Length: 298
Ligand code: SF4
Image 1 (cartoon, rainbow, N blue to C red):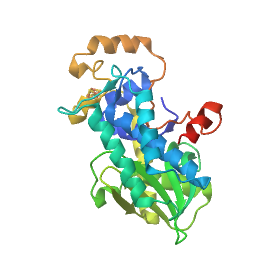
Image 2 (cartoon, rainbow, N blue to C red; image 1 turned 180 degrees about the vertical axis):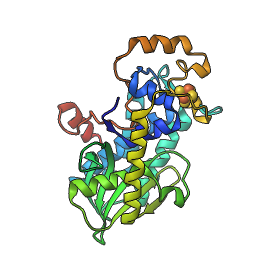
Image 3 (cartoon, rainbow, N blue to C red; image 1 turned 90 degrees about the vertical axis):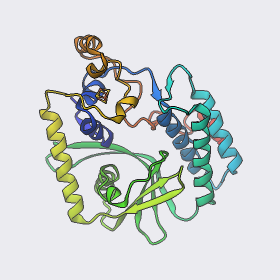
Image 4 (cartoon, rainbow, N blue to C red; image 1 turned 180 degrees about the horizontal axis):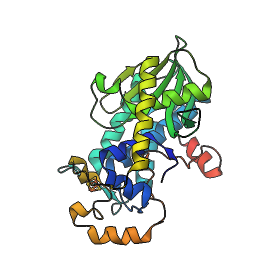
């Protein structure tokens, strides 16, 4: 059972308890990755590099940014491993979406001096309660201080859909990040949650009241309790099953035998794809000659 919960793991449980079981309890290894997550990772990597350059007063050209994206795409793309589910699309379609996302972001924020970047891909580990029974972790894409002094928590979204404002105002991921940042950084002033929908070139903002933050804390501890008390781990069929990396094991899709094998395996190795699957948490910029070389190229 997980000891520390990420927003992704909570979402996973609510979406399908069986998928949660495959991923976090049985830890079934996965040998494939959806193209959407793959492109999301590449875009995040390039934006992270971009901000490292900006921090050194070296704003790269848009051509260099796009060049670096193509390079990373080619370096990591493996036809046998990357899954394309949506009919009528191919790898080039998604590659172009990544280019468009980066161009949109670059043109909107160039020369990237509209605020002060305080952190990029910042890891958070904190407890929701003083008794330390409810641990949460996450990685913030970007933390910035806006010109009006407000702390901002930014999230880069590479999917096409832009949720309604009401949905964003109750979004758990950035809401939890706010709780973490307030606690770890002793931030008592206003905090803005900012979503960068880079593919559709739209920005959305939400601010939470103290009551909303308390409600989020309570709702999250309730979900964690539910996971801790779960034993049935039922399947929950939805349109997302098409993207599920455990479909071959899922009893709903004829995977009962595989499931039994997995259950017998018990403590299998952790999945290759992390729950926050657009993240590259193991990667540390500029710590090796190789990564320094990558930075020079952007
Ligand atoms: S295929 Fe669907 S029902 Fe089965 S584990 Fe995955 S999300 Fe759940």
